[in-house]
Length: 209
Figure 1 (cartoon, rainbow, N blue to C red):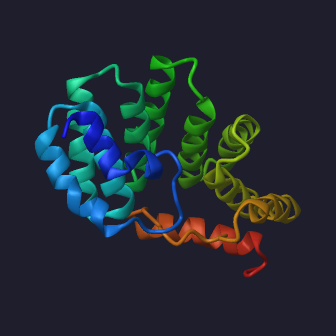
Figure 2: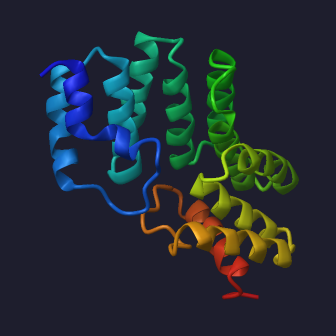
């Protein structure tokens, strides 16, 4: 199977951009090692595999090593820098994540920056820079109003700022897109980050005071 065939066979295009809430088919994870063996020098395969492992697997270090290799092979790989931003967020490295999202936007200035701004907003939120997070998240939502993670982060941000009415409004818009408020897949490795995001959504939903 050629490189394109491996990408399609893994189904990674279905999972990487969409940030699905449900877990992936175990068959996809089982075939990752085959894909990596067949296309170990293809940045696209490496990057997509890294995102699947980073989001649904347990070993974030392996995911980071894969994305580092993808970027070493192609330092101008804008999508690779974007994926690296999310992976470093999952690993708890918010400042590095911001740098990588910004690098991706510089390499692809005509791309959909709303996805990147969603990640930047989340990184700022994790760093407790709520005002700065809010600025990025609001632009992200305007540019890509169907990207569900932005709604969760924005509702969390408003709730943690004490702006409960705005948090509830964003939560209502989220529920119009999905019944899942708390994501069933939580890829963040640091317990304090997991709790920050979960507690913010509970506040927005009125489950905590």
